[in-house]
Length: 485
Image 1: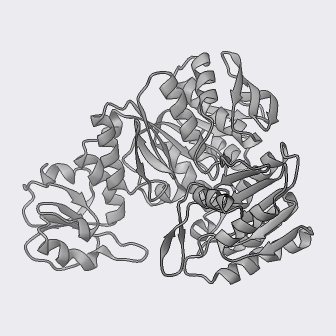
Image 2: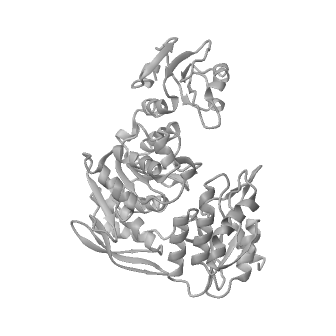
């Protein structure tokens, strides 16, 4: 593609060198530079891409996008005010604007994004529509699956994925849209057919500083949609967003349980086998069943049903799609073990998500709830005692352990969590090594107890100070049980 086509739409501050040249690829990582590519010098939080421009030139880059004054020979230079904000424009141009054809559904919010993407995909498949997922657990293109390194990929990878989906005849892409991605412009130049807001609770405040900033980042999604914005108005932040965007041309559809909304759940029943409720829409009512227990599961089903309703999918297809899915990796996932107690793995790593899963488990647990949990290092220290309080208040016994300590000392994280649990009077023990903590919980579990392993969910690794190790809690539970704990 010609460079002039790739930079169309950029606010260019200056340029040097020939413009009528062919570009073979678009990259922002100097390690991925190939002959004839365009190299974007991104000023990151830890690394400045401008420092690698000479490396890119040596590897054969044909052009570079910069935001800082820098001298370079043998390459076309284009200066813009912000290379990060230029990246989605360049990526969309290079991959020929894939979201103009791909039907893109975006889901943002603190909790429920992953499960809702799987629910929507299940309904779309029931309707015989080819669909893909981009999210925290993985990227699925039809039945093909690849690992995901972050909730929302960087703009170049994202547009490349969209193009690949189109090339493989996908009609829909359902994606989780993180607040970081919205704030950093990763999804700029992407056209969303539908935007969904689930909820907002304490998470990522180390980056956003406060809830207002966090909400404003989430709200950006709803200015990128064409067919519908779907908002949970039982959430206070959802109410604010709905009020802020009601003037937009894109139609607004609300959902909820407690507050009157366009899409509602009535006559809710929750037990160990899942949920039942009556789905109420402006056009019809239908009884719904889903095999993931918990009130939060009702909200996820409502969001998915609302998206399908907007797309004109018939009510019986929605019903079948919501029932057919019984498990989402690391989300209220029951580990298949032949023991008199139950082991559940859940990604809950914020106070609200931990409270949600514990309340859901409490509704069907006939014995004790033993919760194994910790908090990640280099992240929101203020939520650690809150997590301790939630776990202590809603569990019968807790094992405080390590999560992904990263560069922090695990013992100091555990002590901060411990501050919140002491006033709850819940019995607990601190065991730093997570495998040993799981072993202890399984050892003390009795008939009809539930052992909840919270925080890691779908992750198959643990991030330590100097390395990342393989750590799959499903494997560990089965190994320990084989060893008879």
